[in-house]
Image (cartoon, rainbow, N blue to C red; front, side, top):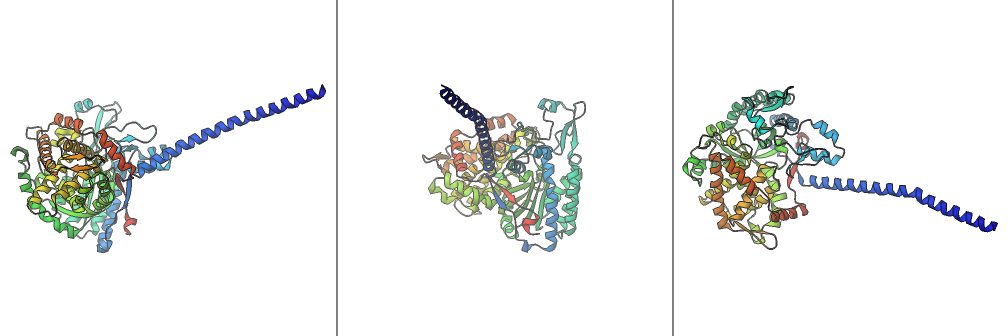
Length: 560
């Protein structure tokens, strides 16, 4: 009996020990599971962020420094230093305090992506936030108080509220007031101005030297017109710089406010000579636009010029989202009407995008028998005449609504980019018929279509992206292309030609009429990505074709 009881006790102790062991181990197993799930979530987040970063192909910005004089090298060093100050100025315009955001972000990949985007909103994904705790991007970026309504803005008695060079803030009573740019961003503009003056000391070209001095002054008083006028007169300078508050894209509330940027350039003298003769055709091209006379009554400045450059440094607004491959400036309509504009083709950046993005897109989405029509010369010409087309059409409305820019408000940039794209192709066709452009016209049309796919990927937050969505849907409705069963697209060249003419006329008329409601309707109906196209664009993502590029750039990259 004693032995039996003892055996039972031992068995109970063993069972109790085993149960106790299991109870002690269960929490440990649960903890391990939680750690694994947390690690998996972190790994997933990092993979997603790495995939976002991988949307950009890295491109080295350089030029043949052996062709530069010692003084030109010194000029470039100071110009890059000046342009670097446009980065923090633009950060404040688009987001606010960069350092507070960076302290909020814990992982390194997200910080890298925030640097690329100059903030916590994804410029290639319709400005969706990618940082925890960050809400939607204000339409007016940081130019206006985030809680300001349009009605409040319209009623505010502030004479310079629509100025390109003021920001709006609230006083201690909550009332709106304006601050001039040169005061709001003085801590960046003063040293940038000093660097421009240092560059001027080494500039051998007299006009360029004077331009740098005037631009240095303009940064400190917001009076940019004198330097814009002088910039138009410069013809033989080897080094160039675009710096200051230039484009209105960031202000999607009204399209009034300009953003700081800097681009340092080295002119390709040989290529520029080849392009110079096209300028003389501007009056004829304006006259032949496919609209009634009242929509083309303005005369484009004949002092415009076309030049090719190596871009060697991007900063601020120019360095965000889809990087520009060509420049058409000044934006000041008064300067444009008096002297025209300068069209700068950034040949090295253009070639990088053609090789790394456009050709792979064409190989996937253009029908095989038409891929032979994809070539760089056509891409270069289409891009060049896009910039030329900015100077054509009409700047003032024909019905007393003032400048088209003001009448169309936040929609102006989208329509202007759309007009420049389609008119650029129209001009290519006109010059090709005159024998001024070589090759098959199908080269230009097919490359143009491939470029639509490229630019649509910039998304609805980008004026160029929306403009391309409108054009894609318009072409589709007009039968300019058909989609094959294998998911490739085939151009119907005759119908594309007709669509090109009718869309050119539509956009020119909307601008000339200052038709805000008509433009809003067009964007709403046509500025969307159809479901089938979304799927086709996803194929490009799955094939790891970059959406755009980022740069390895700077003084050290150039070896200066």
